[in-house]
Image (tube, rainbow, N blue to C red):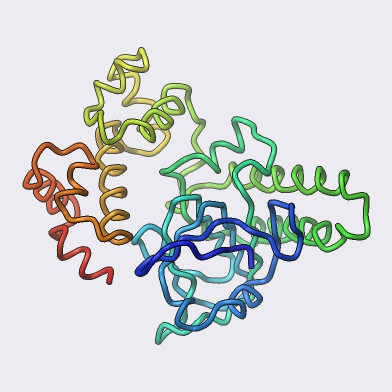
Length: 297
């Protein structure tokens, strides 16, 4: 399996490794092969990856989890796990491994050719975790994955340099198809405007330091009105709402994935007092930090 355990309970940290094609930073496999590689107890644990995982469900039903949000998996569902996100692998009722007919693609961030359009899918921390596809989109992506899987299987029999390059571009084409999918709420895919694109990258660097929308606007050289307009067109939320959402996500990851005291989590996220962090977390989630940690374990 293209995963290596490096962490401690409750979350398994996994770095990329492809045992079948050493040196190739992409793998295509059926979900059932993935499920067979993991013991039952490990399958039910929470995982965090440092690579991308795409899953297209063809038949069967299950429930997954991405960053503490349950995701219903049905025929035609496309699931996308980005590096750093935590996930619970798909399970059926009773928390047993799901019986899904699904295709999985694993790849490192540096494998597909980069472009502004593919980055809209791969780099957006607020991008959709899943899409419930209609029959036409499902069939289109299924064919694209079949081409990718065929080239992956044929790699030992073909010119390796040419085939690796072909795999990179087939994966990029798949990401471009995903980039033009409507959001899971039915909204058309938004054009990523420059202010939002720059904000998104700055937010990943500075969410523990800059907490107000106007601070990001000033750093990026835009008015707050311009920044908010770009953020709302891309996500439906203001810059301040996106900052708070990113801080909450990191707080949940730290509380669920580490044994850091709440006060240490508070300091890492830039709060001057643990009580301020607790008030913020409770207001945003409805749970105290301690209660949230307990529910995840």
